[in-house]
Length: 71
Image (cartoon, rainbow, N blue to C red; front, side, top):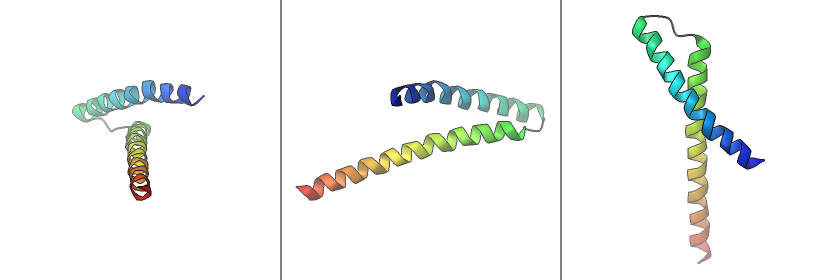
């Protein structure tokens, strides 16, 4: 089940980020107000992506610290 979740995240997240930034850029370029839902979607995808990376990085540091203290 976890592999399916990771697969869906890997496929959907880049699409949302790329599509969202393109649509966001077109709105700005044409002087149209950016819809709240679009800006929220892009912000949520970016925040979720970088927060997941931060958690993984912190876990990796914690694992290396625990490994170093056990030696």
